[in-house]
Amino acid sequence: MSLKVELKPGERLIVGNCVITNSDQRTRLFIDGKAPILREKDILTFETATSPAKRIYLAVQLMYIHENVERLTQDYFQLVNDIITAAPSTIRIVDEINNEILTGSLYKALKAAKKLIQYEQELLGNAE
Image (cartoon, rainbow, N blue to C red; front, side, top):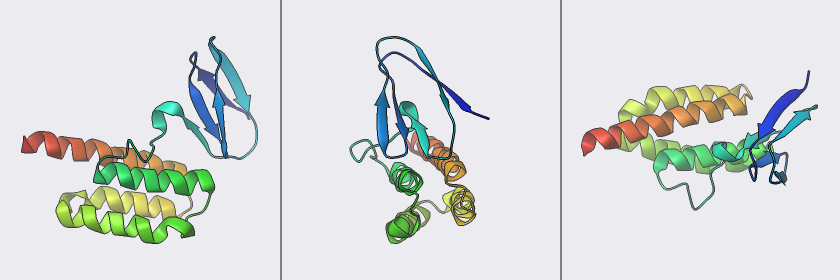
């Protein structure tokens, strides 16, 4: 079964190590095979990873795109230790991310990392 992806005009998509940029029209793609796929709205860059939770998301994103968990493990765990030390209430979500990474479900780990970003924003909103 193919993955169906609809792209808005100018929207970008990562498939494996390639960036695909849509033209000026809405486009529908059908993707067969196994490769990491991320829509533009789900992509963070080094410049946009401006908080601890976003840096964790970026680390998981890089694990997913490059299909190489081992390369980023040390950096990832340093980021995780920092956020748990600063906000112990994040441990439940961090455990969820860790479990998905350990089972090889990196896309699910990304979804859990998005929850961590949302939770971090809630915490910061409450602090103000």
